[in-house]
Image (tube, rainbow, N blue to C red; front, side):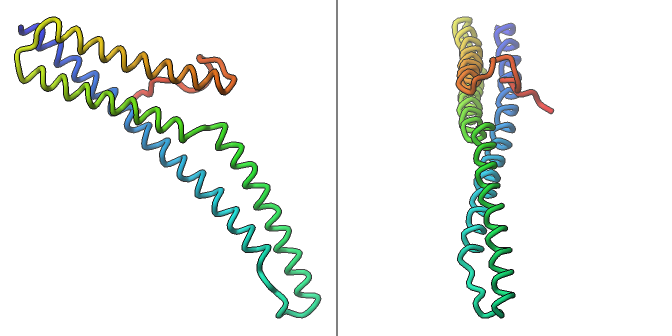
Length: 167
């Protein structure tokens, strides 16, 4: 019994650490996804506003110069929107934060189950089931990560680690 409790406490500690790691990465990806969308939206809106501004109240020469400046600035903003949209799709922060959220929530549920088992009298079968659940959550996350990497045309072992480490 003592050994089973020790195993469960160890599994709980590992589960809590993994949950915290994934949760931290989830929030990071979520912030990046929001920042990308915000930057793209602001640049697009700025370009639209610059193209629509009426400067006819200025003198004829000044109005032409200001209008040309606004058009050129709007053109640069449009090019930046295109570039940032391309980068955003390459980084894929939105799907990363959803993937991390799914994993950290699964670890949170497992944490609860382990705490419930610790409050009672755990059996060997229950400890084995919970340890298997830990490995299954990790396996599903890794498989999802590999699938995402392959869909981006990258080898699974190239680039970011599928399992975030606490910094």
